[in-house]
Image (cartoon, rainbow, N blue to C red; front, side):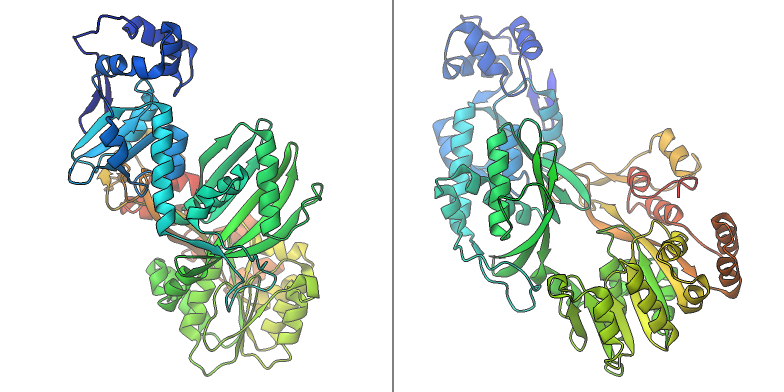
Length: 578
């Protein structure tokens, strides 16, 4: 008996029809010789009958029912529980019929054990559910109808960028409603535009279109983790999808040998949303990554943004506030792309923006308009780089300066000189931890004495996924995780892990939390850095002054039940590999 959560079981019934098309032996052969999703069709082909003829017997064999015409007509799929792309990929639909409290599960392959386990996680919140068997054709028609109805309610219009949009965003004069997507004659248009729509519904931060040897793979990055949402075995479709994206971003569709960058804007649900496009050649064609920038959502977040709302530990908050209140100096925030560095600096600016100081920022792009602050967008096509903009800012009588990112030696030199000449400078740099910053600036040719004289402190941060509060349950991590994370097996912490539900899309995680390691520049540390002492000596000195690294900060969150040791291991490095 294969068990599906919420009391749904695939069982072999005692009563069998006269025609023995679906037997335990036949099912075992189907599992051995055909792929998931194709096994009932394989059985039908072996029996020499149509699938619709075999379906009632298969339903009896697995203890299920065949979906009636009324069920197919009335079902309202719950795409918030299982996204439209997931329904298509896994050949399943979950929803309700008006007037019935039961959750109906429609699937095409009752032999797929992985699908059963996956549904078990997704449907734990459904107290009453019932499984029905459908043909792939009926399921496809059901999803097409539901998608058409959903698209008729929502609208997505490509439009010129609104006020505050980044310079260089393409103005795509196409009126694109979701109802029109369904009516579009080109399958490429339907594919790309439906992926954009689904990504916005799932709050994805990035959309990846990856060309492979066999076709196209589409992935979303949700809460910092990639998940596959669509796979197409069609190389021609992959090329056409990439061309569609390049047309929207006003890129050269004939150029396939060098990387290209562009942007386009959409208006969805009354909100202005930008897509930053990066196209890169690969062995099989091209890949495209679309970064989603929802300005209205960000505006709502930043309107109430303070350092307190970022979720840092109290000692990190005290560190940031103390350095933000300094009259001059250089505060560095490090971390990989997408780790929240800019958001942290916005939180700092939000607390020091009292109107008494001239605050100027230079960013690429300007993600949100901060009231009372002069913000300059980088425009490299016109020659406005970070270095040139920063040099001009220094002639604009600023008190405090934020540089979105230090990318080159010239910008690094100017930022250090600005901090040494009485300005307070906040900026970000890509480095793995607070100690690697010294090497990064040394590689850029910045004098060590000037750097440590200007530098007041460094923050290295990461984002870890938060265990879903709606479905988190106590659990005991595997012994190997304790060893890998450096945690005693008898720690006795209230470990918790999400089991998957509608709120977290079955992932067990919902939202992210910031963790950070901080380094305050003391005289002793400055002397070691000027002497170019080994990193091990600098670290030893910092630990003696109370330094807490990223791994320790993440473990503390896991011990408090806010995340898991699996997430700690995924995000933070071990002490010997920094």
